[in-house]
Image (cartoon, rainbow over all chains, first blue to last red; front, side, top):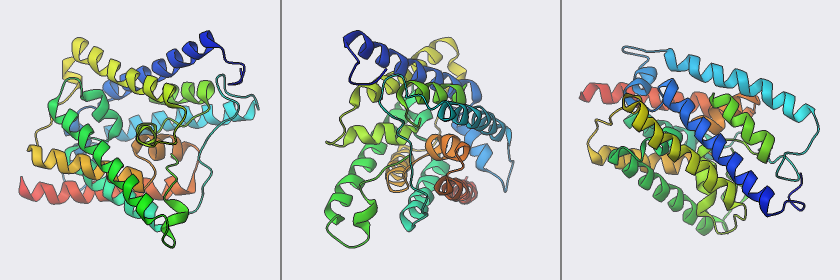
Length: 164
Length: 124
């Protein structure tokens, strides 16, 4: 159903389904061990006592999604609650991508939390809650900085886009 | 399950399940589709509350001092905004779609994470 034809009932249905995806995603993180920072650090500890089990979690999720993604887009049918698919289209590798990914990696390695597991852990852990709060501040800082830099040279082309 | 949840969001909303950008877009003033983002995050939080009740051991303790936790959170926020994604957006969805950007981003953040754990290990 397209967004234009989406009435009140359809809109609440769309929210319910988004919440179900979020809850399923969260349950997946909990079951797979992603919400145990010690295991995540063990997974990143390739020079020490490496625990590769989370690699299987990741491969499993990629396998399922790779199949689903192709199947869904091949059907050439619109998503239920929107007029079109909105997936990242950029293919260029720039310095921002590399620098950003490296900064994220350092933060991930320091505590063993990335955004999804941190949000799932936040109701029961004050550390995770602090982590999420600081993460939001970090995102906000980048947004302000990109706006300031928008008038200047090459940052301007990329700064507005957060794509995946 | 993570893959299936991401697929459900794709079928229903036509979006990529990238946690950092679902959250990050809520901080922008020009984001109009806030509803499903709030709902998705609400689902994640609900899973956390329920998980903590049913299986508290699934949520592991954070053992680092709060200064380290705060710094890590800040770096993750900055890094995912600048690099357009995290473990879910680049890692699960991006690699599945064979996105060239994600194929570069994932090894980059894994390597940075591994180096960080290696250095932090020297201080333990």
